[in-house]
Length: 114
Length: 116
Image 1 (cartoon, rainbow over the protein chains, first blue to last red):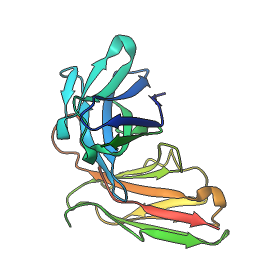
Image 2 (tube, chains in turn orange, purple; image 1 turned 180 degrees about the vertical axis):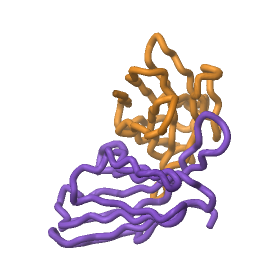
Image 3 (cartoon, each protein chain N blue to C red; image 1 turned 135 degrees about the vertical axis):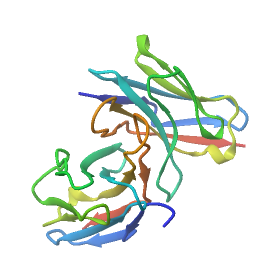
Image 4 (tube, each protein chain N blue to C red; image 1 turned 30 degrees about the vertical axis):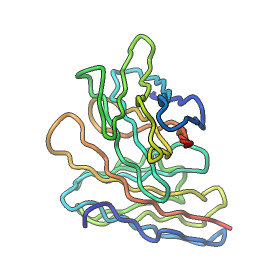
């Protein structure tokens, strides 16, 4: 079975500050890992994905995440927050073979203050 | 269209009524997924269609839930005898199965279902 834990339902940062959103996974098989962002009244948009190539993955809008097998983590970071980054972020895991059902975390709402 | 579309965007119904939710996937996407997002929770997988293969229904929470898809076109998710715990946002996603080990799922904006 696979699962994802996102620590912190809300994270608040100031504009220009480092963004760190935490994700830990559990998987009995080598996983694929994803970060999605959901802006208000919009569908989910893929930020980045880990598919067993490079452990440091760069995504859109300046976000990146590092896969750490020893820590079973896939934390999302951005060096400098923008107001436009305010949204809900979801970490997800899937198997790396066959049908790719996504198992999502409960989400972290990022708040950015001026 | 340019993306996945879903209708209606909002649906309010009375307990015990049946509802039908619609998803139009991106043209050419052979895979289609339904997820449910309850307030304060992550997305739960409901069902997956891949081309003309038998769907994977392993996520459907009860026999009141069913879904259909004809070929690679529109899908409908039907909830019979709705209960208050069915209140959630229902999200549809589609993907292509061509190219690469994994295919990005593109999500629609969702249908917000409220059962009174």
